[in-house]
Length: 164
Image 1 (cartoon, rainbow, N blue to C red):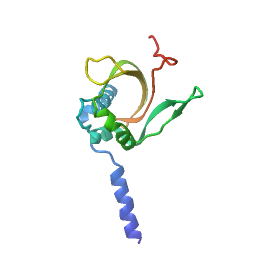
Image 2: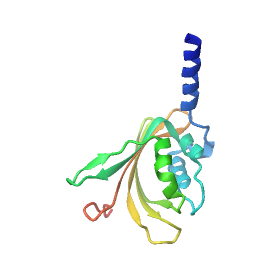
Image 3: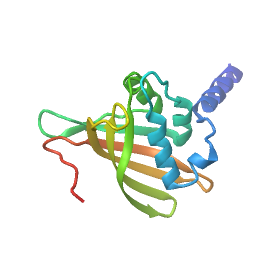
Image 4: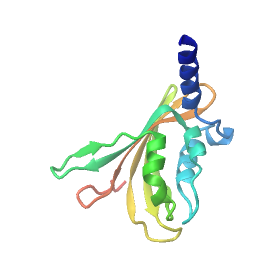
């Protein structure tokens, strides 16, 4: 029984390890941010490369949209990369392009915090249907950068983007 349990635990550990990334996608703060926007963006009918997405995220990482409540506050919806792929994949595959329009970055040691203002479109050149700010928390493990968290909120009439 102990042998079976050990094999099961080992299998879970292997499953939890993300696929290997392309080194150029994780070599800098700039490259990993661009890779995240690139992997979720694409024309209608294009499947997203979820293994590439997983390769950018630290094991156990979270994607967290802030969802407004009727009372005026918000709730955080905690998603794994796989949860995000399952929930968002069908909508993204209808045509979705998210691009960064502004960035503020702070780094300290092996961590970085990036406020990345974005615009979302269904096709390049269209008027944006959504805007907001992605708050990326990144970790450098000595050889590469990882996304630990993306926490975001969308622009609304009562929540406009900052002017500067």
